Image (cartoon, rainbow, N blue to C red; front, side, top):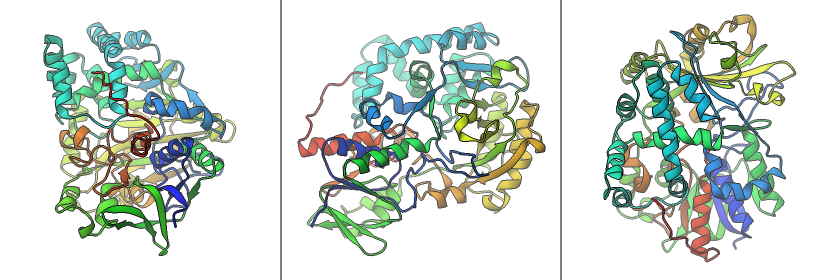
Length: 527
C-alpha cells in the first residue's frame, strides 16, 4: 500500500526544495530526516547563549537566486515565513593587514573597481572586463547550472570554432592560481581573487577551476548577496511549512536504513525502527553516495561493479575549523568605516600566505597564519541577537587528518582561540576577551556527527575535480539524477552542480515530473 507518490530520504534544503516542487505540481510527498530538525546544511540554532541565532553551516545565499525554479516557488515560501534581506551596497569586505584600505565588493561593480584601483588600475579594468563578459553567457550558465549536465563535448563544440571561444576553452582548463597570475598583477588583488575562488574548498593548483571566475565575479553584482531574516534555516523551515500545508509530510527522527527494491525497481524505504514505507512513483535520496549506495542497497540490487565506482568518489581532505561567537559589539576593522559596513569578510593576506597555508594543509599541519572568513549577520538582521548584541562566525580551512595524530575535537577550541582569534585581532581593534560573551566551536568530527553527509568533516558533498564535475558527478552515466534502479533518483551536493545553497533539488524534481509526463522536456541549449 503506497500512501505517497514520492518518498525523499533527507530533509536538507535540496531534499526539501525537491519535495516543494513536486508538491507544487500536485504530488503527495513524504520527506524523511534522521535528525529532530530539518535543513541539513541550511539551519539556524542558538549555539552560544539564548537569543543568539547562529547559522552552523551555510549562511550566505547567492546561488539560489540564479535558480529559476526557486524564483517560481519563492512567493509560496514567503507566505510561510521566508523573507530575504539583501546587501544592497556593501557585500564583502577584504581587509588588508599589510597596506592600503583593503578591497570591498559592492553590489555596484564600478564602486568595486574603484577599490581595486587603489592597488592596481589595470587589475580594476580586467575585473570589469570579466564582469561584462557575463552578459554574453548568462542564460547558458543558468541553464547549465540548473539542468542535467550536458556531455563534455558540447562545451567544446560550442566554443572551438572561433578564436575567442578557443581562447576561453584554454582559460577554462587553468587552475585558479594560473588564471589569477595570468589576469591580475598586484599581489593583494591576486590574493583577493584567488581566495574568493577557493570558497568551494578547491585547491589553488587544481586544474579546470578557472572557469568559475567567469561566473563567480559577475554573479555577485548581477544577483547580489542575501540572508533570510531570522537565520539561514528560515529557508528550510518555510519549505517544510509549505510542504505540510499542502497535505504532504516531513517526518523527523526517521533514519532511512535501506532502499527497498523489487524486480529492479525501487519501491520504498525501510527505516531504522523497521517500518517499511512505499511510494507509487519515485524514491529520492538526497544523502551522499556512500550512505545511499554502499549502505542503502545490497550488492545484488545494483549493477556489477557499481559500488566500486561509488567507492572511487572522493570527498577530499580539507575540513573546517569554525567558531561562533556571541558578542557585545561587532568587530571594528583597522581598514576604516567602509570596511565596517560589510557584514561578511574574507581575509587572505598575500599569495605567499595562501601558499603557506595550503602547504601546511598538505603536510597535515594546523595552519599557523590562516586566512579567515568572518560574518556578523546581525549587522544586516538584528533579529538574530538580543538588542544591541551581535553574532560572529569565523572559520578557515584545515586538514581533515593531523599528521601528529591529534584529534580536531580535542584541539579545536584552543586552536580557534589562539590562532584564528589571534589572526582576527591583526585586522580589528576591539576583539578583546571582554567583547566575547560566549563561543561554540565546530571541527570535522562534530560536523560529521551533526550531518552524516559531511563525510570526514568535509562540507562540500565531494571534491570539485574535473573527474567529479558535470557529466561525471557523482558517477559517469548517472549524472542525470536517475539511479541504477528504476524509479530511484538522486539529489544533493554530490550531484551536479555541487555544494552551496543553490536549491539544486529542483533539477531532480523536474526529472521526476518529466518521467511522469507532468511536464514536457525543454531541449533548447544555450552555449
